[in-house]
Every structure is written in C-alpha cells, then in structure tokens.
Length: 100
Image (cartoon, rainbow, N blue to C red; front, side, top):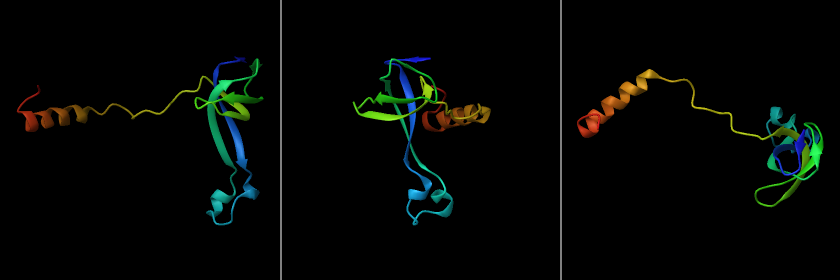
C-alpha cells in the first residue's frame, strides 16, 4: 500500500499503436507509445495497478497507472574485471612513473 506523498512511478499510454504514424518502422508501429513518470502520489493511498495522479519534481500533475513504489535505478556496470586493476597499474606507471 502506497500513501499520499510517497515517491512512485506511473505509466501512461500517450498514443495507442493504431494511432501512431505510418512513417515508423513496422515493429515500432505495433507498440503503444508509453510515458513513464516519477512523482509524489496525490491519492490518500493506492496499490500497483490503480489509476493515480502524481506531482513531478518539476511540479507537473500527471495521471497514469501506478507501476512502482519507491522507484530506483537498477543498472550497473557489470561484473568485476580483474584485468582492469592491472591496466590501472600499467597506466599509472606510464603516466606518473609509479602507483602514486
């Protein structure tokens, strides 16, 4: 259960697939144009899947379907690569004459 004022993410369909221009690639034409927006929930409470309104950091009011509470970035730069440590040592040696 999400409460009023919580940071959330909503999904809004801007254009349905059949409303999109024919100038797009065929596979893109088959997809809805979707907008993802983060903001502060305005309803007293809601659950994922409910239609809600949020106020964004730029003070815009946007309506959509609640998809996530407390959204955060989930990307990273991959697994540790031990060779990079050796590259760093070599680079410091070339540039500065040591590991300083």
